[in-house]
Image (cartoon, rainbow, N blue to C red; front, side):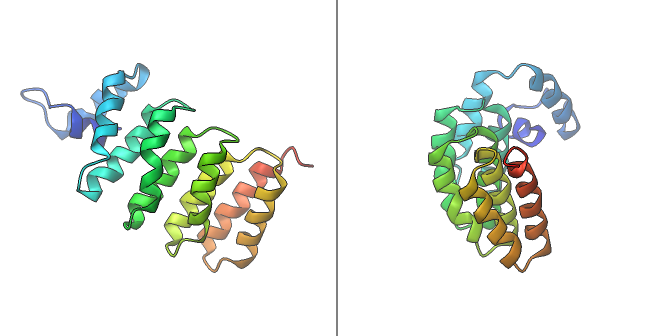
Length: 169
């Protein structure tokens, strides 16, 4: 959020980057809808670094189930930049809400992404969006846990399985 504040809110006359975290903390309690609108607009920036920061900010600022924010995030799941895809997956996972089929369908291809960071973010988003006890989601995560070559991805899958399996027992 502090990075997003630096992008969209001009610093005070004598302020610098060190004041952005203070401003972000003040804003965190009561989010101005204009700040979310600014973050959504920054998703269209040509700079992938700006997009990554904006994706994180939208993920923090938007409410669960915010269809406008979700619609703006979904195209970024197909971005050619690994970090943008990972940030988009994380933001979708925070906003989509449990059982959101559109988000689950959009996240699913990233579970097999070439980049392990994207796979981790997708696993976390998939777990947050899947319903607890969902047999199909649990089966998919078990397959990832058994087959993925990356230790961090397998750990993410194990954590996601623990979350989704709680009420399936």
